[in-house]
Amino acid sequence: MSLFPFVVFSVISLSIGLVLILISNILGTKPKTKRLHDIYESGMDPVGSATKRYDIKFYLTAILFLLFDVEIVFLFPWALSYQSSSIKPLMLAEFVFFMFVLIVGYLFVLLSKSLDWEE
Image (cartoon, rainbow, N blue to C red; front, side):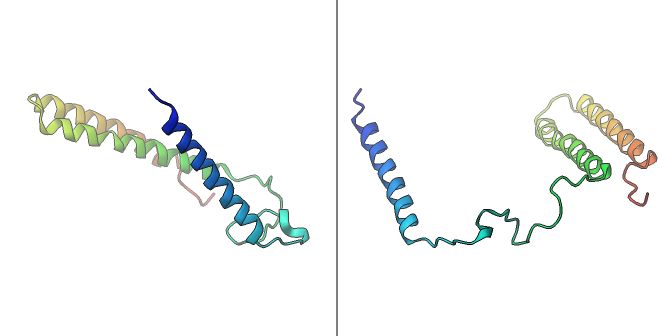
C-alpha cells in the first residue's frame, strides 16, 4: 500500500494551516497596550480576586441536578426495551421500583432542605 496519498494530504494540510497563520499575522491588528494579556471573559472587565470562595449551595445544587438528570436518562433505554419486551409485568415492576428509589431520594433532598437558599 502506497503512502503517497497520505504524504500529499499531510503536506497540503500543513501548508494551508501555515499559510493561514502567516496571513493572520500579517493582516491582523497588533495592539501594543498594557491590557493585551489581560483576562477577557464575556466582554466584562475582570473585577476582584479570582480566588473568591463560592457557597456550598451552588455545588450541591449542581451535583443534585446531575444526579437526578443522569437517573432520568436511564429511563430512555428502559422505554425502548419495554416496547419490544415479552415480560412487560416484570419490566413495569422494575420501573416502579426505580421511580420509588428516585422519589425517595428526591423527598430526602426536600426534607433535608438541601435546596433551601434562604439560609
